[in-house]
Picture 1 (cartoon, rainbow over the protein chains, first blue to last red):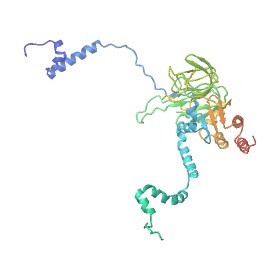
Picture 2 (cartoon, chains in turn blue, orange):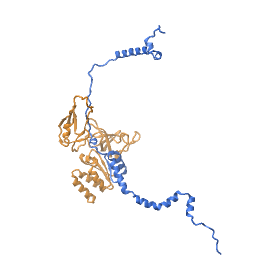
Picture 3 (cartoon, each protein chain N blue to C red):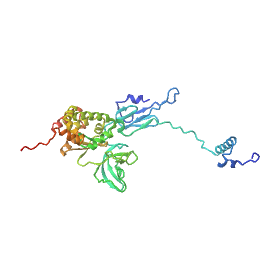
Picture 4 (cartoon, rainbow over the protein chains, first blue to last red):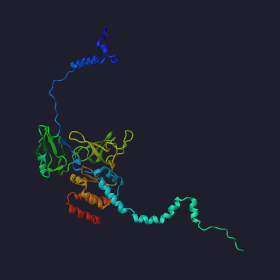
Length: 151
Length: 245
């Protein structure tokens, strides 16, 4: 094996790569690199160096003045548009939410009213969740006994 | 770097004024170099590498970090990319509609640029309809183009509208006042009566309220707002609230 030399082209083939030792591999790679660099050519031009552009232009006022989206609806005239207003103007969302909360507090039933209302409901609600047998036993307090008819 | 520009904030500029930005020629190795970029809004133009040219007369405004623009009063609308406008369909020809937006040229609106529109399923748009649309192309060299969908393909309030309302024109300055966050005109109107408004950046306003009379009240109020001081306006709105109009 040692006295018979294989050609370079044969050694470079894929199936020969496994059997090669490190040194020949390195030499082959070097040869290849030299061939590539000899073949590689480039234009002899001065280096183009574009300076980073520090001035940007924007033709619209929307981003400059933080203008809002142009659809509005007031006092619930068009609920769809009111939804859009909240969605399209994200910056004011927090303020809107706070306002909504405040208005909800004003509009909604207060805790006391709620308690008063539920006081009367407790009995009927309990009936709803109890079983039928319990319901009847609750209703029938008096023991029914057969009363003999009087002559 | 922008000291010259910063000094002039709030002052009146006229077309032809020039500013020079001092860009450091050499990089300093000791400090971490961060390139500071300046964003120019309408009214300012770049001239060459480091010069700014004023092209509109008005007041110079500044916003953090480095945004500068000239605020001016004008009646002619110049289309700008991304702005939402109210347009009137004037011509229906095959694939595109021609839309009057009040600019120097009519904008084109593709029939595919509506929500849910396909080649089979054409949107029902007639000549004379109002559309609320956004500019996708707008520059001085090309015909402006409108779309009625956002980048996700949803309408988000754009498209054909305008049943039972009234369209009128106001100055671009009033439009800006209406659209500004925490607008005082809108907050006054908000308290007055339930109504709906569509505000186009091109100076067109569309209003609708529960009756024709109320719609007219809203439109007259907004049109007169254009030339009023805040106390005058508040007085007018108070009178309107009392039913004087």
